[in-house]
Image (cartoon, rainbow, N blue to C red; front, top):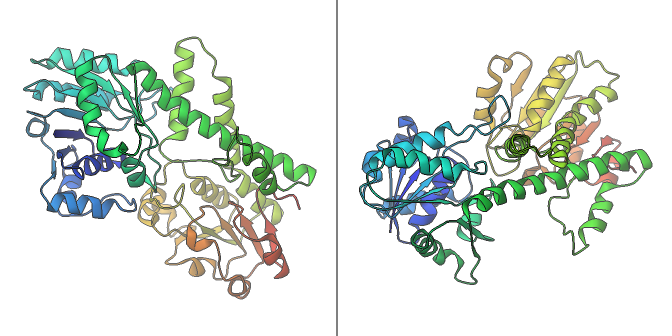
Length: 438
């Protein structure tokens, strides 16, 4: 089949390369000329494990193409996937301007029937708006569908190639046949394609993200209680997660969730509820707890030093919002750094992949209170305290004896509960976890 993908971010680039890997001819479109030029040269503008080799192989074998010209990508295709950004607006709603602009340009470029599917995370009713926009510009028949993505940053390629489920929000048989044909190679071991109406598909995406986010905020609140009563949230997590009705995933306490999906999507769901007179109180509380949780690590560092960090150097390990990505959107580490700077500290920070993005985000703070280091032990050199924010694998088993020698202070703050409490305390560190009441 011939496929066009509009947008080359996490979703669009993974989808384009994934579809191409099963023999489809795929053209990815982006308005960013520099980004397209880099992709044509084999450069991947985002860090996502496995994506570079997937793009390189399909480009080399002639199945994956990149362009800025949508009028060259769309004519004659069987399917178009809109995978552009839906940033949060000032009201909390999802900004659909990029989605509708893409739909307009797709409509102008259609020469034959095609199914136009939104992969972007969009509010309920967006398929109707896409259809209206296409109708205003297209001179041929088309179908509209919702095909939400369920990709985890850091494991997006595996999620796309081996999906838990494929949601097809369609309202006509022709669109169903085309999309099923595209996805059937991905689900040969079992039919995990679920067909429903477009509005249900759109709501499924928001409901899934909101429920996962609520589990994180719930456990973070339990962690705060665990500290007050002298319990250990890690053993509580294991006890709760072994209940088959609940399961073990997304029950880890930490410094709060970030990224491009959960924060934006739960606020968009709150806004959608308000538009329809439904108070999304659980979702709103999930967001409130998360924003408060992002302050916990900074508050603990300040409390350890009596509130004033003037003259103190704090090392921060992990800046991306999660491991295996360079994405720093809504990252808890950025909140922590601002809190530490405001209290008078100097920050020495390191992340395996996110350093360029952090440098761009922090701007003139780099060199004026923040030093971005080339390795974890360089960041810890001479530090009065070390804060772990992102649980990259290389941070799981550090040389604590070396840290004991290299650091000026002895305070460790484990924001992900990955270090052995007894081990670090035997080395006479002052240790703080999240919900580790012992």
